[in-house]
Image (cartoon, rainbow, N blue to C red; front, side, top):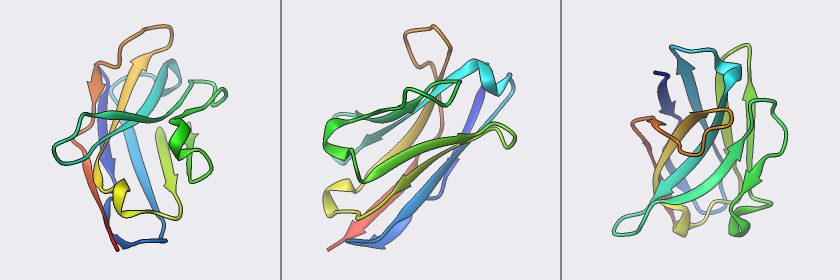
Length: 119
């Protein structure tokens, strides 16, 4: 099973930027699609962005297009989520998740990293 370690969260003022990182270990990195999800207090977990093993066909939550960008560095076995112009409503725990290419469900999850955006 692939292991995920996500990091990079913190406290930022509205309008600021953060970059989250997700490092994969335990399996061949290029055989996995990776996604970011987030869960705000007292809300359901929601999809943020995804990236295929090829690095192409990235997907984003419609409401986040233009502010968030997902990328991957295969040499570092790392997926990044760059977040710009952050808003208080972006405050949440952000999780990265992975699935083997072709699978439907994301079954491997990171421990989560807190992002807090102050107004």
